[in-house]
Length: 307
Ligand code: APR
Image (cartoon, rainbow, N blue to C red; front, top):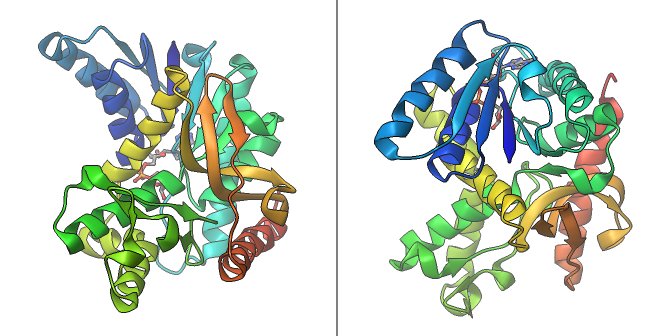
């Protein structure tokens, strides 16, 4: 198993380290445009391996030759929004970056499964799928696992229970209109709507929606990476070990949930073939409307892309 992580910044490097620690591949390749950064971080990580007793070759590179024949490619490359930059400016800058990364990577790893992490997530997953000309089963966006992990953390804090017993579901795009589903969010199997009043549920839903910005407001110079990398690695693990976990992932919808030709987060079975199934659950009219609105926001952004 060979895994390439493109972008050796906070999310990419932390993802690579988690992959190495969990020994999910024989070889992990870190790629970045910055000279020396992927090489230095990869060597540093490899030098930890005798101490950690893990046999994983870690390689850093500024080009794609070293990534040839990867089984999985994780794209975390991109830039953060700078002062004076609109969301659309950011989208088009990251679009050019992700397009370049996806087409360069697929040229030497035509059979790879791509996991996209760069933001704006659902739009970047679309860009990667188009640029790499891949079937939808092999381009999967990471957002729902992170959003659900945040929701789970907040539920556990609120009820003072172990995070282990908390499950949560979040659908839709990775943005302000994401759709946390309290009805399907449980503590030891009990829906949180039975354990918390509506006001508390609404508060936790709002905190989940604002989970990314909460971290940015603390860090000031960057965005979250511990939870995003953990969520990415959970998806990689389900693919590598063919676990067939059901995880909320952003995938290209072709009629599922009444949505067409757009990326949005839905429950997906992840196995060795990538996205193996989209699980369709019955939504109530409010939930369906919220999901449709969220997907419409993604479609509108895709329409503004300068591809
Ligand atoms: N090819 C490869 N790497 C690139 C390219 C490119 N064309 N363009 C930029 N990069 C690299 C940068 O050099 C940088 O090292 O991507 C890396 C991004 O790292 P950070 O700035 O630390 O950003 P990070 O916090 O890792 O977030 C990366 O993931 O969660 C999302 O919103 C986040 O879109 C952002 C992405």
